[in-house]
Image 1 (cartoon, rainbow, N blue to C red):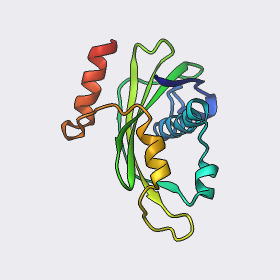
Image 2 (cartoon, rainbow, N blue to C red):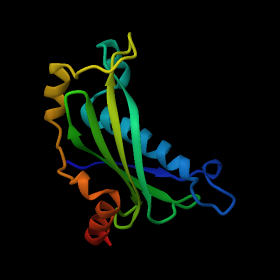
Image 3 (cartoon, rainbow, N blue to C red):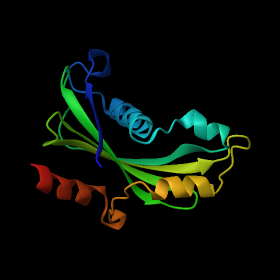
Image 4 (spheres, one colour):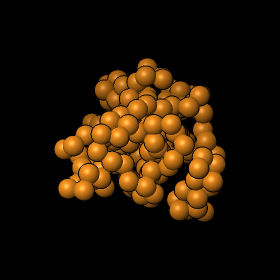
Length: 157
């Protein structure tokens, strides 16, 4: 199952040339990931918070490939690429509305945190069971995000 959603690039998110501002790519893709979890798996972040789980971004790696333009409809795909005891890695792709042209690729590492203490913690057994049921896309992170972008571009363009 491919987790995907579509968004219109808004004027207030663009630079004077009508390109989506670089920092807004992160917002669009992270918002899409949250939407995907809710729409495809019935998961909301406040539900996990009540269970003593939350995640913080440890790092982002992003490659900008083609500009997203004002009033353009873009598709965003998100994928779980690593499930570990205390973190997950997610790959997010921004594409054109036909999902044929790659605009950007984002790898985000989310570290599991105890919301009461603010300290790193292990995922719960219930979370690991839930997440292991999600499709995990095998990505060779050692090759790097630039190589991954090349691989993806050769598949869709």
